[in-house]
Length: 376
Picture 1 (cartoon, rainbow, N blue to C red):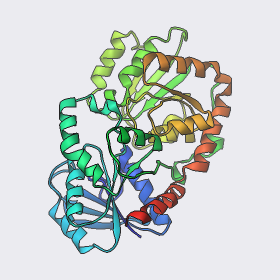
Picture 2: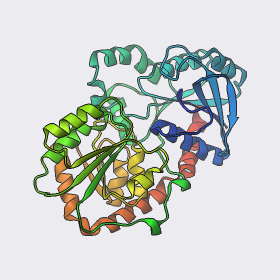
Picture 3: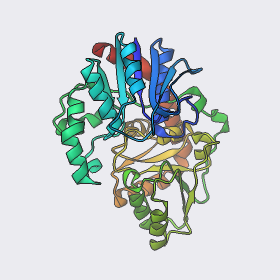
Picture 4: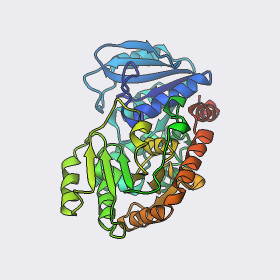
């Protein structure tokens, strides 16, 4: 089976995978290749057209264009490449409200080539709240037709199909969650847990306050009067909200409790997460949360927004609490976890075991291939 995965900003040589969607596409491509599929990742924005063979068994075909940013223009060399490699294949195009994804879908449709849309975020109502007037126009004119003309929509959590159905999308839905690679896993002997001392909380991800619910998280900690001492670290690349969040923390009187850290790309996520006790993600909308899965692999306990695709795995393994992205619910979740502090090691190991047994990329890819064969 020939499978093309399109992610416009994927790095041309598969290096510096510091962004969640790139890591997810890399993981799926690696798993598919391990299952015997012929896999190529398509990307744009390189200085020149280039084909690169990775050590993980898949190819990267990168095409020259002015930018990796969304655009209504598909690289002409990418178009020629697709036309010259038109043997039976399936295209998985990745992105949500993304002009390049829409434009490529139109080109594929014109060539009668099957495509699956992998939005990576759910079409939850809150995704429409920010810039609502523009989002709804884009939805009706571009996004909805693209989804309706797809062979399938690939979601990270089958629960996210509900939001598509509410929006009158009748395209078949397939679930392909995120997974882990063996290199992501630290030996259990290197992990440790703290049964006393100041509880240390961590958010790890991009500083996008609205999407990641970081403003909600700060408001929740501001209400945490029952816990005399605690520390929250917020770490990741700034998407324009770091200054605003610092100002919010100061206004709430939390500056002494909250640490903002720059991203550390030279360390694995598990190494970053391991010194902390509790991983927090309070997203208003969230496809999966690779960082939360990495926290489970590191044996941490979690507070997770109920919309996140990782939430069912947290519930099933009882390695944390799943909450509404609301200050009072998050506060209650924090208190319930602190009340179980003596169980944190046991809980963390359960979460780690559950991920190891259920979310290996090769297992996920094998199930995905069973779905893809129907759409060639």
